Length: 260
Image (cartoon, rainbow, N blue to C red; front, side, top):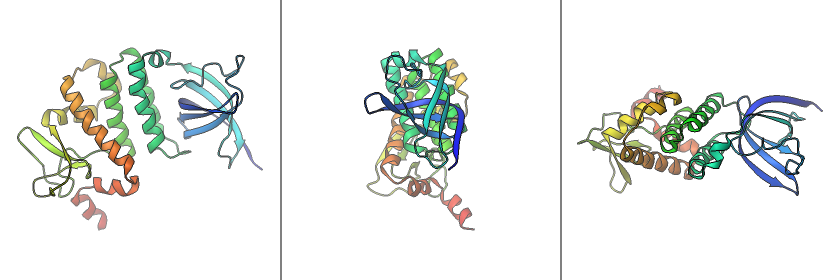
């Protein structure tokens, strides 16, 4: 029987009460992706874990267990940054909770997610210095979808690859995860109107670093418009099987290329 003793850095996504004084703690870790561990007696007053198992806490953690164990035991958690101010701000924490849910819903357990980990940490640091949670959370969602491979298609028609232009706006079709040109639209497909200005904001957020967010102030109406589209896209993906849905995000040209 092979036992492992591992050490990594992690951000607490959630903690679930287990028994009278124990917790099941879910971290997003740099080396092991989404990781669940069993924490013995952290709810007791004199627990060695202190407040390190609160949501958003960024810590260096150690855990031990068999190589094939589904729930290794958490043995140490040393806080690097508590992000207490983000938990204390109710509106900010509600927005951040959506980001944590994305990790729990999209990411497979036990697989390294360095890019997502770095993205979450950078976003939390930016929120702590300037809690414009609407912009920061939208930024995170856009970059997260790109890393996970589920970005919406807002540049060209998702079916034929043509540029789908309109008079200052385009129609985003939720079931397709893409804008569609007039030749590819089917009657009855639900769509959301998206302005060209909102698409420009999207393209900027998809390329900028989190530290740049403090230097920009997109109009509030554009943020709401784009947030609605991104949230609709995410909600549809979570209802449908992820594997089958991802194929819809490929343009006709990409599908043809893969076939050859």
